[in-house]
Image (cartoon, rainbow, N blue to C red; front, side, top):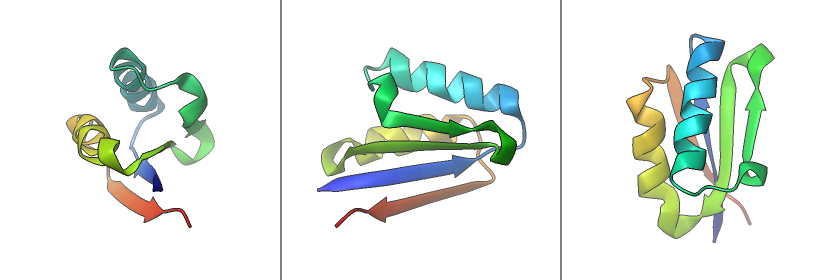
Amino acid sequence: MAMIISALFDEERTIENAVQDLVGVGIPRDRIATQPEHKRVSVTIGEQAEPEITEILNRHQPTELHTRTLA
């Protein structure tokens, strides 16, 4: 089942760093959406990758982290 994991950050620079880490572990860039104006990164992934993505995003100390399952 597909999921969206969204993280909000304090700084745009942190968004760039998080995206680099996600791409670095093999997450395709087309699965990563950024909204710099809202300081948000969203990743659409399969359920099995959720722990790894959550761990990567948490390394960058998000102010909020949300997970949503897609129907």
